[in-house]
Length: 246
Ligand SMILES: Nc1ncnc2c1ncn2[C@@H]1O[C@H](COP(=O)(O)OP(=O)(O)OP(=O)(O)O)[C@@H](O)[C@H]1O
Ligand SMILES: O=c1ccn([C@@H]2O[C@H](COP(=O)(O)O)[C@@H](O)[C@H]2O)c(=O)[nH]1
Image 1 (spheres, rainbow, N blue to C red):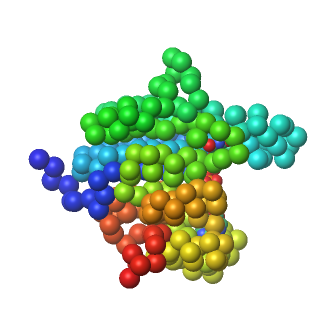
Image 2 (image 1 turned 90 degrees about the vertical axis):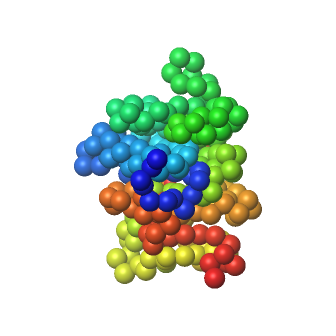
Image 3 (image 1 turned 120 degrees about the vertical axis):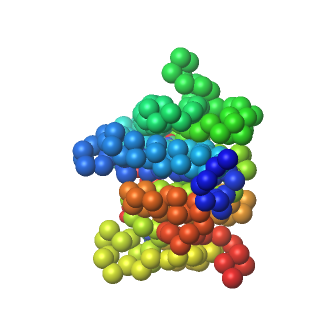
């Protein structure tokens, strides 16, 4: 029997920023960050939480950036999606080292490298306590991994999307540019839209709102933050419908 404290969630979709994987290295993937995240995910699995995972690709390629440099946007987005597969491969490897069962499913078929995305199979593995990493975003250009996280979160009927990022949550202004920015503890979807707060891109955010999928934003580099979020503790920012915040 598990001795771990009770989680607030049965099934989560964890979205990790690709850029936050860079760690102290300054580029690519810092294995130390991956190993730490793998151990945090392991403790969630041991608490009985089912974990679906989406990892961004911003540490390697973003289509918009490549298009700005003169590349065709669709090709750039294909490269961005393949970057998320590379991050997924690295995370699967880190989970394996930590003795956590995981499957890597890609929205772009990559025979011999990982599984193809399959909704029913994903649910089957989640129920077995296997971490399912959803790579290659939605499989379509002009989207982001935030959209993929909300889409997969809704498909797998996750209780919430937990968005791990480089800052402590959602602020009233970009905290990197405004040191005096104030952190919100709770927000509702409408306020985020009215104040144009940068939680995630609009397509992803409206998808979450329309399907009443709660979003929690936290700092993935703050030790213990993920488990506090999962235990329902006061960590980061929670976004739901206004009536749920009363
Ligand atoms: N109101 C705000 N509250 C919090 N962060 C904000 C806000 N406005 C802008 N930001 C910026 O958004 C950044 C978070 O970006 P995010 O984690 O969404 O990256 P991403 O592009 O989704 O991830 P990836 O690295 O995978 O591409 C923070 O580093 C912060 O500087
Ligand atoms: O559904 C998707 C998801 C992602 N992309 C491309 O990948 C990069 C990396 O994802 P981030 O969310 O920015 O970390 C993204 O910039 C897109 O270029 C995509 O095309 N479709």
